[in-house]
Image (cartoon, rainbow, N blue to C red):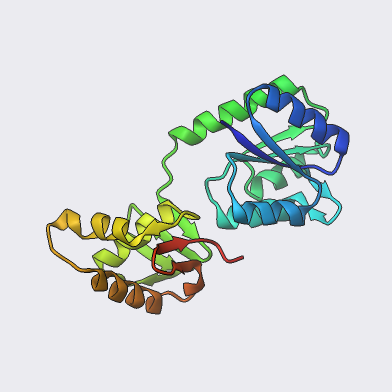
Length: 223
């Protein structure tokens, strides 16, 4: 099911979009404040985000930049009355994938959402992000901002698994099986503990690497 977060302070428009998209088997949550949708995004990522430009407690372009800094591949669509070409260019420059000017046809909006998601499915995102941490799968490298972090093969594998499952808790058993068992080498539980300790020491922002006591680990954005 397509899950939509929609930042819109006009109750009538938000309600109309929500009702129509839910008739198309989408799940829709409408937020009338920037602070509320930011909080929701930090707790759970939807399939796609729709943004109005003018909100009571902030601007959609600032929200778009905030989202794009954290989730490079999350599809974003502006829905706004601001149809000037300069505004449209600014919208795309802040990271939007599509730009729809009000008033719009609901059926056309749904079709554009489906087309955008089809394109997103075929695109291969080789970079994973968590706070300022970036893992480049093509280069098999890890960066904190512009600085590359030297990591061992097990440390890289751990980060890859956790960042591909950002927001989900991965058990210690899963990590042991996926990181070491594939090599045929025997390791014990202490190996993982020591490796995680060394990995934390290498990260400038270790707070994004959460320990779930006696269970496992989770990567999540802290801002």
